[in-house]
Length: 84
Picture (cartoon, helix red, strand yellow):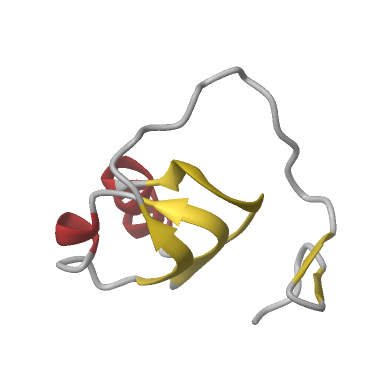
């Protein structure tokens, strides 16, 4: 899973609930251009988590976002269906 949070470290975009969903879906991990939380719990899960930082503040759930679209950050374009 690749999450483009615009590099913001103001709110976490991934936490233990999404980690549990990753396990349930058989995903190997997540790359986040932003922050994560619940790192103590995520560290016990057999999934890779790479993010710019950690913050305990949860996301604002506004129902916004897109899926299955190309995203670009850190000089890399991530295309749906490709593996990284």
